[in-house]
Image 1 (cartoon, protein in one colour):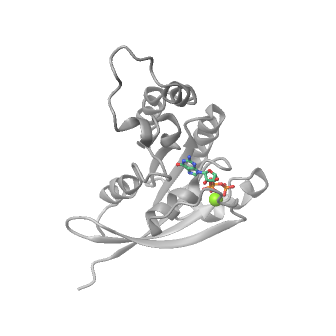
Image 2 (spheres, protein in one colour; image 1 turned 90 degrees about the horizontal axis):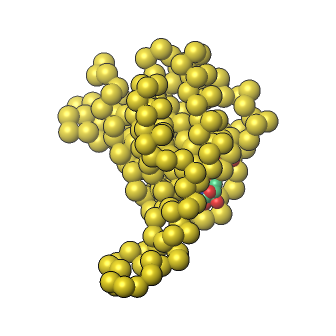
Length: 195
Ligand code: GTP
Ligand code: MG
């Protein structure tokens, strides 16, 4: 028997935060360092397996550029889930994410499951070359690690507190390394009611 349920999901967020990259990682397990901006929107599908059922996500990956803002309602109307993405190295992108959440909470399906994803986590982590070896006692911390952490503009605790208050799922992710990506879609799936 085919128990797979269709779930319409929309991605929203400021331009260049990594919406298309998050979807590409989830759908194809790939990353493109120079991904071109989305024009209008892109449509992709991917199955998501839970212990007791399989969901088929129908994903609308919207364009973040301001000139496409007016198209968004077409994509979030009837959506059962939304992933609102910001870039943890760009504070203004969290403000944009909050305005998308407000718009969804006013205009979208009242039962919509919303996840907030702080992307580009790899940019604030030590590079792979330095993370394998523990620091040598007496040695100065590597400059690359220090520079990396200083790129962060949105503290995890601040975004987590906002997400909790607004009733959102919350993740920090990297489309580049894949960290946290499958979790977004799995945790959303668990909150979609069984029909
Ligand atoms: P629009 O379609 O214009 O709204 O942008 P978008 O949100 O879809 O962003 P996109 O996925 O096109 O990514 C923008 C740029 O950021 C690209 O150069 C990506 O390679 C890069 N990028 C996306 N995700 C990550 C990430 O997790 N880490 C790093 N380091 N770069 C990323
Ligand atoms: Mg895009």
